[in-house]
View 1 (tube, rainbow, N blue to C red):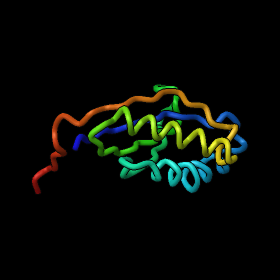
View 2 (cartoon, rainbow, N blue to C red):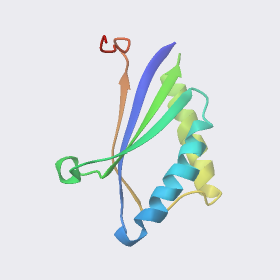
View 3 (cartoon, helix red, strand yellow):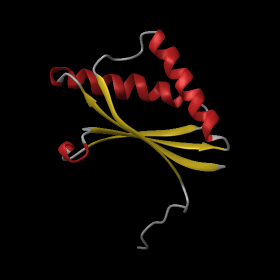
View 4 (cartoon, helix red, strand yellow):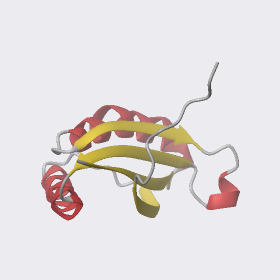
Amino acid sequence: MERWLYMVGTNCTDPSREAEFNDWYNNTHLPDVLETPGIVRATRYQNRDPSQQGAKFLAVYEVETNDIDKTMAELQAALARKRAQGRWTQVIQVVYRSLHREINPPLSRKR
C-alpha cells in the first residue's frame, strides 16, 4: 500500500469570519474528507508568516491507497456531493494543492 500526503493551502476571504471558517474546516470539512476510503488522517496548521507562501492555513491529509487516482476521484466526487448538501463555505480560497508519494519511511531521532 502506498502512502501519500495531500496538502491544501487555504485562506479565509473574509477576516471577520475567520473563526467561523476555522470551525467549519475543523468540525465539518475534515470529517467529511475523512469519510473517503484511503484518507486516514487530517491535520491543520496555521502559517507563521502567510505572506511567504500566500496561504494562511495548511491542511495535510495522510492517504494510504493502492490507487491514488481512484482515491482522489472519490474525494472530489464526495466533496461535490457535500457542496450540493450545503456543507461548504463561501469564504474559502484554495491557494494551492499538492500530492506527494512517500519514498522513505518516517525516521525518528534517537534518544
